[in-house]
Image 1 (tube, rainbow, N blue to C red):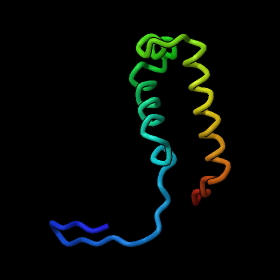
Image 2 (image 1 turned 30 degrees about the vertical axis):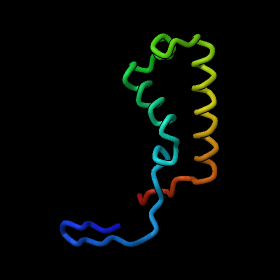
Image 3 (image 1 turned 45 degrees about the horizontal axis):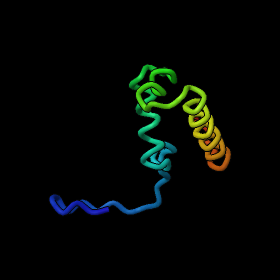
Amino acid sequence: MHCNHCETLVNGNYELPLYMKLSREEQEFILNFFISSGSIKEMAKQAEMSYPTMRNKMDDLIFKIRKMEVRNPKPEENK
């Protein structure tokens, strides 16, 4: 990565946060869930979907995130 303004150069291999590994649509889904105060009912209403459809969409995303966490476990913090 290079900044053309200050000529700063950053090199290395960096692990992206889990959220950044999700698709744009999945990121927006999570943001909308947060903005709707965690109400699946409200999200379904805004998206003009049934509650069960929205719940299934959420369950699919939860499953995907859990699989990603298993593949990339968090390093233990120093105590």
